[in-house]
Image (tube, rainbow, N blue to C red):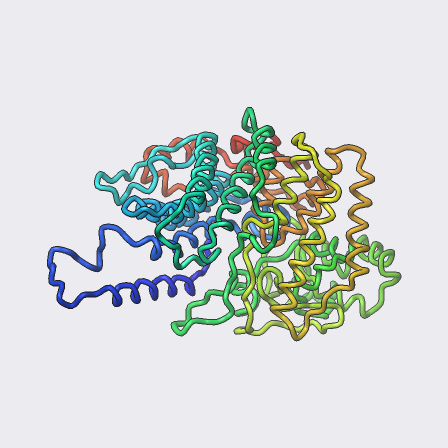
Length: 561
């Protein structure tokens, strides 16, 4: 996955220019020093690029396909050429994190070091979750005095242990007094209290993911929760906020989903019919904030042109009888107005890998949350998108207080921790609805409407009833993870991890066409790395992405047909 963060890159270069000009001494004629190639860089110049590297480690697309939310990689037609760019981009960008760590060797700066350690633990943790064994102890050495271009691969479980310790080291550094103030921090503006909470939250995430693959997994997770100090308020969330403007040079720093959907003929992937239809039938208050309807036209199966555009297998929601029957039960009827409304929810079922017709003006687009797009309530007429629409100032949720609540529930229901999982579940749902609504009201103020309090309460109570009806903790956790599936729209790495870690939620649609391969337990190793690094050759040749799991994956999901 690649993001476009050129806005921040321009910020970084601007910082470099200002710093260079302000520190220039015109009487200094030391010709043995090249000012354009310093041996070390200042931490404040490296910090924004290091933060971008951590942000860029999150998968916005394929994990959503693996999780059944969008029609991207959901037929698992992957091979060793699929992720060459992902692999190379990760090590290139995280060189900036390693550079930040090295920069702190020359100054007494425990805060910068702690930030770099936190970013490294988060980014590398994502990378291990994606590929398994990867270069770690010998990585990022290409620019060393004795460069190493053939880094060994470390075991995924060993890397996890190192990252957990790295989080502890970060917390210890944050507890020190630093003579150097943190500058150019695009995440927390130098607030070390918030960075401390993030370091502890990254540790919680690592412990949660790995708990079934470590001998003391649940005990360590419980101990970390009991120690406290992690993110508990949305004010401390680890999120990235995109801008809404094009730069003077034409580069674009808006949300990648917005760029895909709103700047042309909607090239965004198809959104899952299951995700949209269940939110419609559940009267989910987040529905108009998540999705933008482009059309009210009902396609005609008898028309050859329309027939070629209708999604494969009769899954088109507005014509799907099973959906219509449920809709009648929920809404008390099915009129022409209902048809026109539902026609705008134009996506595909999971695993529909048939050819894509010229349907960009029909496809449902991402809405206000999280992409910074448009609100699309029932009272708003569906309208096709046009290029250059303002907006895109959405968010990328990385670790939020809402995520921590779902971590807590899992630790209680499946990890032996004490606590009131039900009350935390209610708080998690309410908090996420508030998060979505607030962002939508801010982004599309002219159209967005807050849902009625009574409607939110009805929705929450319906999920609590499902929770109460589940007969075991295992069944209750399955309910919780299904709600998390709805909450994590735009944050699908968490859902993919949950599916591999727990096998929940179980009620996710199977691919409607037999997939080319089995469920992705990891991503395949890139062939380019195998060609360049002899230590990778065995990984490329012998590790199979739908057969060989990450060390903490004990579920081994498989399709049955």
